[in-house]
Image (cartoon, rainbow, N blue to C red; front, top):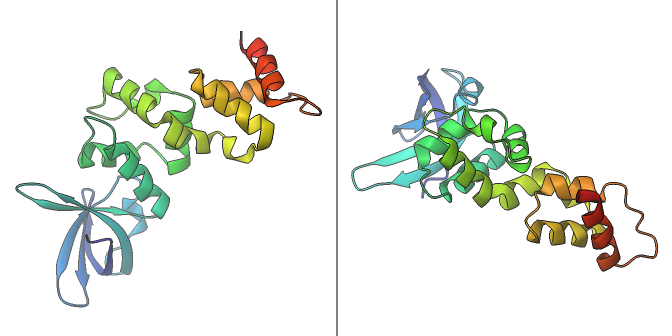
Length: 189
């Protein structure tokens, strides 16, 4: 697996970088429209990469940060999403913006990508909302009884945004997780 390419950027055009390594090997790396501006022609660069192996090709995809690469790899877990589509999804905005859109289940945001229809966008939301959306909505800051309540609401099918809003102003003093869950359910209905 090729995970990092370091060298001089020879060209930066059309979402593709060509990088010449110190060993004299040039690599073509596909990058998102958002991240392409991070690499200047003639400058030394270190690029995180993902190698997609196909029957007829070996394609490298490049990323500015580890979080961008992780989101790309999560998109690949969704049925029907390949590397090129995942890269196009990264062009929607920053990792935080995309994660937030998934967390709030914003279907129209995802369908702004060419080739992503309503059904595919819904599949992305269903398969990634617990993997991506949770961190984007601030749930990771909730611990103890409130964290249990949020997880319980999510298990019941509520989105993390709905769950977070339901527990936002709950008084936790002297209450069990079960009592808090009942109060949160009353707020949602």
